[in-house]
Length: 439
Image (tube, rainbow, N blue to C red):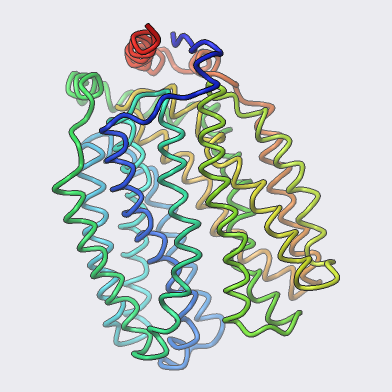
């Protein structure tokens, strides 16, 4: 099983390896486009509603169908990534969603728009497990969470820059121009990934090539039956409940309850988004130094979030609301990489597509539930009740952190023998690589 590095090693992690650095840059760009594509709809929905004469419920359906398709495609996407390779499926997903992004900008009716949104969600749904597998194949276990933290900070940065870029574009050229422009960026990123993505590390390439199809199929069934892996998905659900709930409704709250223009509300919410980007990187660095022990970070951070979220809507002014929301988002985002740390550090590359898909599925299920439930609570009761509901996500995440293994050895001890045996080969290789670096 995996032997953890000495304490002296955890205080000062080594720089990322060359293949990992290049992979981080390319996947950061791909994730940035992925997230920007998703955010555009929030900015152009009023214009779409006016052009197609859509009610608010139909406008909401345009948003929701994407998340349903995205969530449904997670586990099939993970199986495909494990079957055909992370690089191949990541490139396929990027190419497909770029096409559907451009076609969204050409939609001629409400029905056509819904079809494009479903196809867009299916294509993007393949990407997260493929991207995770791509990183794992090109990085050492002891650097994966730092690398993944850098990559996924792109989501928060996209939340900052997308409104700033899209709003003037839509004002000048209409909502369709936003989709055509983002699709053009997608073509550029696809080309860069296809030409510059490094080859897998030797040990990952050997492990992948030595795994016959029947074994992969049996391992997939074992992973999907593995209850412990789904506990990590519960943590991701709780974290995402907070993030998607706030991103969906905080601007509307500031507009409806505090009287701000939507453009001003969007600009103010860039402050929590920047805090989330910083926390994501910091969380990855911290958990790599701890060898994956997530409870030390998750429980205190989610305790802060659980106290802050109900207080937000009771803030006496806009400034205090932004301060409290920034604290809540920072605390939640600090847990993002620690939630993923033990599975990603412990499992071999051949399992990473399905394993990461299970985790992301938990997060996207929250993306389906949080906006709808908060809207119902705000209509039936108040925004105070709606924001208090998000504290449930913090409680779920903290509780699941206490009910999940804190290191790779304990995590794999709960696994099916087939999964444990396959993971052992990669763990041994990682241990040998770490010991070599320390000598």
